[in-house]
Each structure stands twice: as structure tokens, then as C-alpha cells.
Image 1 (cartoon, rainbow, N blue to C red):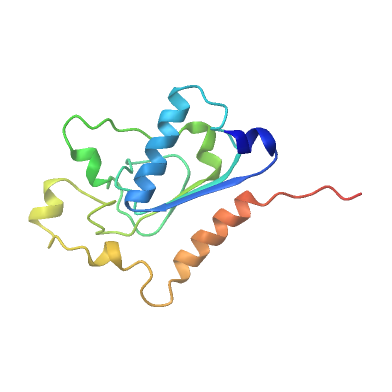
Image 2 (cartoon, one colour):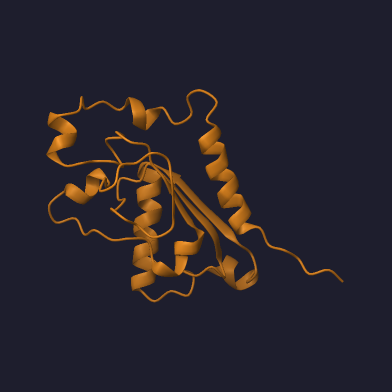
Length: 152
């Protein structure tokens, strides 16, 4: 919090992969519920969630990758786990990337286990090949956080 107070115009980029994305997702929900002023585009330049186990169907923000309609994070299927989207104040600067058949972020319930071979190849393969889609995702986040300085 002291960084926000010392540098009020500084933009923070939050990015996480898998469990890191889940930590960011939950921290933003907790901060929003506490009424923290940090959860705003004044302080957060962009949020990049790659293969988020807490992803919800039809989330706010921009969606990247080939995730199925209705797919959601595997953690949302755990009994007693509260589902929730990223705070609406951050939808304009939030991007989520998930590819179809990623058992962690495109979980389809029991169908993911019975009718698909449960493996983690998609989940661990985001940087395979040239990863052009992933680079575009990162650039999108950087562009969202860019501050245009006034000309004098």
C-alpha cells in the first residue's frame, strides 16, 4: 500500500500462470470485498491470468485462447469453493488466456475426466512452438498499462 501512496500514478501489472493466476484472482476479490481503493484502473494497469484454475464461465474482461463456452476453472468444482469473477472495476484491463481442453482452466465437470483423456499437455504447453498467441496476450497487457504522458 505504501507504494501506491508514494507513487499514486504508478501502474501495476499483475500476471500469473495457473496457481499464480488463482492467487491474483482471489486477492483481487478479497481486496474488492474489503473496499480497498487499490482495486481500480488508477493503480492497476492490467491483469493477465493465464490458465486460471478459478476462471468462471462468461467472465468479464477480454478472453484469449480457444477455451470452450461454459468451461471453467477446476477449482470452481470443489464443494464449498466460492465462485466469483474478477471485480467489475477491472474488467476493462483484465485478460484471461485459456486453451480448449486445458483441464485446469477449461474444466467441463465429469466430462473432462470421462470423455477426455485427463492429461496436462495443454496446460503445460502454452510456451511450446512459437507461442505467438501468448506474446500477443502479453503485449495486450503491456498496452493496457501504458501511460501516455502529456506533452509540454
